[in-house]
Image (tube, rainbow, N blue to C red; front, side, top):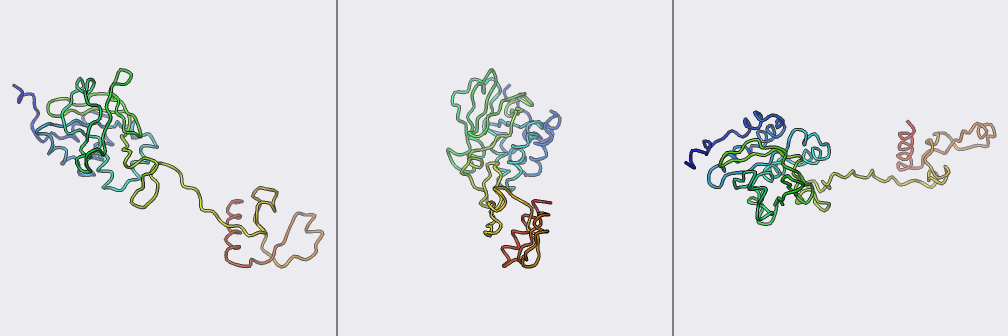
Length: 242
């Protein structure tokens, strides 16, 4: 009787998500990454539980930006991070004994890494990654040995998105905005010359000669730039004023 409740092995996960509506982004990512076939190979045995972000979850600009900034191999790891290598119907998730659960990404990267903390929060199942907390919003598919649940957020692992994490290009991937490079100013162009704020760029001209008329009009002629650095500063201020 138990075998009669099992769907045929090789359940088309992508088609199931598309038929469930509101999971088109996740379906496309599974297909593009190639992990869908990997998931379907795991459907036998202990089964699978998939937590799939809704299209609305992917419309969250911060989560989408952070996820899309990853190289392809890390995107695949994050997708594996959304899957438990065991079948858990909703009732089992609500009463789960061990809240810290390994994922398929754990199997790839080692015990203790890429785990999910699952608990009951405000009447629903909450999933905490150490970076974000998502909630189960709907059951997309639940038939032994596969359960697929829609969730409210993209699950971002702390292994990639904590403040100290570095991506393959040695750039922070915590969603922060990089500061613009500092440009050293020559003494003539220091902020104090302009009363503590950025002013219009100096006018390129010849050596200043005494000109009361020019001063009254507020026109100051500066010497030719002495070096390449001064010229770069001139371009910097001109860009600010444009």
